[in-house]
Length: 212
Image (tube, rainbow, N blue to C red):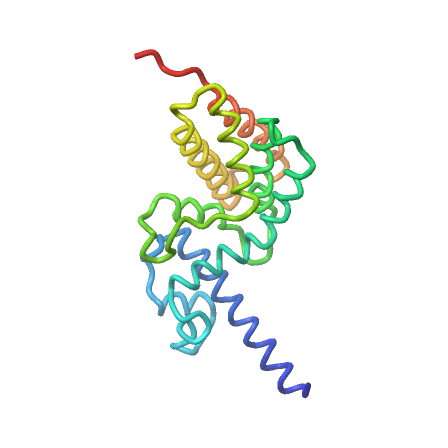
């Protein structure tokens, strides 16, 4: 391969990644449809006004790529944790859901906004952009285990408990991410905070049913 071809390939890869990082930030701050393609290109430092269409084909495909980019790390970590644990151990399963996401709070050069990106996807009507809810092998394995554990005690409220747990996890981690960015949360305190979140989620999943 000639140096020119190598340079072009590197440039294309860098442009794609710049668009992914810019989209992640813009969705986190403005929502899925809350920013223009022009602003996306500006944030990515891309001059080609057709870059989004050229590299991804659509906004929906770009958003899926943001998710896939981060899940390439999160999903294998989650599967590894679940394989090392008992799927009947509620604490271990909840930890396998939370910790790979919490790892995304570690500072990185492009900044951290993936948890706020996820929170936006979770509370917006994004089917028109993303299609069905995005899931992975690791998450599906964890959710299957949680359904079995909860159903043994509260068979009539499994899904609502899982939904509340999902909101709790995403919102809390997104809040920590924002707090770190504002300088209000110390990275050194994250381990204790994430541990508290895990215990809170476990307690909520098994909380007694309300008396009518």
